[in-house]
Image 1 (cartoon, rainbow, N blue to C red):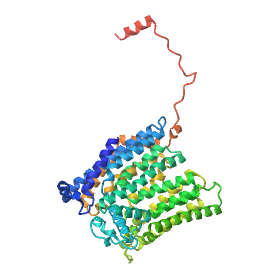
Image 2: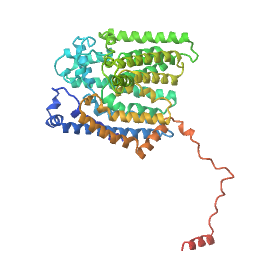
Image 3: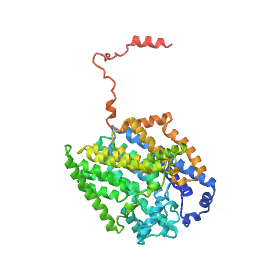
Image 4: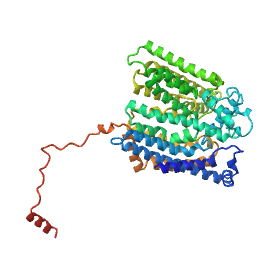
Length: 518
């Protein structure tokens, strides 16, 4: 199991060197074999096949891990099982630390923004195009002239990394180590959240930190969303164990990575209130948490010298249309229908309307949760965080695969039905397998066709064959430690139904029995 996942990660690393965007000056491009593969369409196809094979091996190893930690829930040591999940995650993540940003160029943007901060150029006022040289050679052209939407934490870390090296690949590795801090926070927080809700902590950990979704998009893809998710989960745990003020500080830190992280502060505020809290109590606590978290967020911006210009960059992600966004898909479809009907509308008119309505609905959901969700209950606080982050992803004008990292740490620690756990497993596998189909293959139609064919083969093998269905069913059953208690046990034999013990056969009976076989 561990070796299979390690082999899968190694294949993702090797294939990623072929299919990923690299700076033109990267020394590894001097390797003739690699340059030949990258320069030929057949070579790039081979690289993609290697990546998808590696992701398939990772998915198979993860399903085996989930089954093993779930199978020992009755008799095994849960701390030992959690340790196994953490060790597997460490082993499978190790090769990916050295990889270039996989399936997305965001990591190269992080490196460029850190270099800008180090040079005294505000990423909140200028795009990476103000720089020259290797550090911007692999940045996605669509982001070259846009300001950053990220908070002061990744910029401050990027500043310190740029003080150590100007090598863009080393800068990327440094940012990936920062993302792994988020993974470590999840490894610490998820078992505690699962304990609050009565879910198996080992299996919940496996569903969150070791999944193909996490390894492909969080670790390999190198997105700030992983650090944000880790800080959110840690904020909720710290609020319960050390007080709401410290939870608010961590919630503000999550927002200082990426603004949506601040929504966890709603759950932080509610969990520390008594169960019978009045509306006045709610408002007072929400105001206190908001004051601490926002004060800390602004303070981080001033302390690091980057300020609060990220507010102006919050609209930057919405400048692209992504098919995973429900509101974008709905609005675009309505514009298409309007065109068929001959309505004289400006381009993207209804798209803008639906997106605005979705954003308004998301704000309304936050307000409703703050005023109506239960207080003083740990399990309900986890549900509140899951509701808010899930609602935001559904209603957001832009959604990428890695946005699921906002939701899964909280959803996986809820008491879910078998169907819901099965769906979570399927989404985690498929989101890992299709990661190469995201923006990294934009316009590469032959590669998309080949990749889609491979995924169409791998997904049924991993999820829908008879053996795969049985494995996923066992994982779903194991998610709740007490679920086996709901299955009626076979009736115990009563004294009246127990037959009397048989007497040993006598010599004459034994002789007759032997003659009957002649």
